[in-house]
Amino acid sequence: MTQLITETPTFAVPRESDEGEARRQRLARFLRARREQLRPQDVGLPSSNRRRTPGLRREEVAVLANVGVTWYTWLEQGRDIGVSSDVIDAIGQALRLEEGDLEHLYELAGKQQPVRRSAVAEVRAIMSRTLAGFTHSPAYAVDRYWNVIATNELAEYVFGISVGSNCLEAFFTKPDVAAHYPHRELAGRMMAAQFHRQAAMYAGDPIFGMLADKIAAVSPEFKEYWDSYVVGVEPHVDLVFDHNQLGRLTLESVVLNPVGGNDLRVFLYLPKVGSGTAEALARAV
Image (cartoon, rainbow, N blue to C red):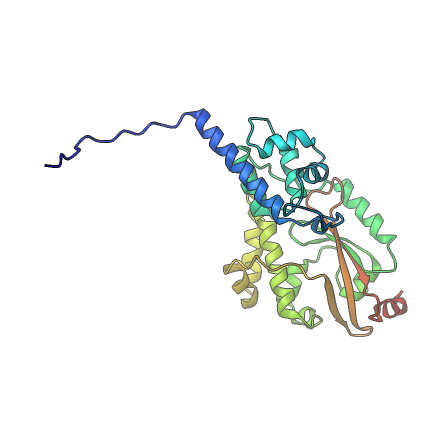
């Protein structure tokens, strides 16, 4: 006759060292997976047909993150080594991690993700002087909430923006602004996706939710994008914009993060070669 086991099984409580080892191994697997998903050309490195394994090499990630090759190799091997927030950010940038992935990287490293600070007034003033000297293409700078904090004259003329205006609010609440975008739906989804990512980056900042609620109360379009968490839309490279006097403009957008600017982004719009945009802008200068 089969004997039934009636004793209650016991489970060993994981020791702190076991938990740390498990976390380091998950971190190692995460780093390897993200590294193998990148191609050299994705990070500005020359491609080669002689690679025996997919993705970037460890030494390439180490160089991009400005850390030692041996140290990064140990990190991918799950060794018990210390890692600072600055290094986590550098590795995240090297691996082109989105905000959600960067947050996960912090969790795996056992670190609290720092709250990003707003750019200081001195940097904002420098932006104003810098953009004023950029005269042949539209350029402007925005803060984390998409408030325009600096602009040049050409951006004011082409886009009709001014310091103090909010790009997101103007697009979704002013029909005459959005009418300049022939690819309105794509532009709207892209802007909502970027704002969602910004909100995630500053998760403790309530102003994002307040601004989103304000725009959603006026724009059903934005409300749909915001409530459905549209986040997987990649920024389009070219901006197509219909100007009342200059006609259709096709611009290549370049986004820069100034040193010390923290939450500032600078948008430079360069004329698309062969589109006639350079000639049109020359008439406005």
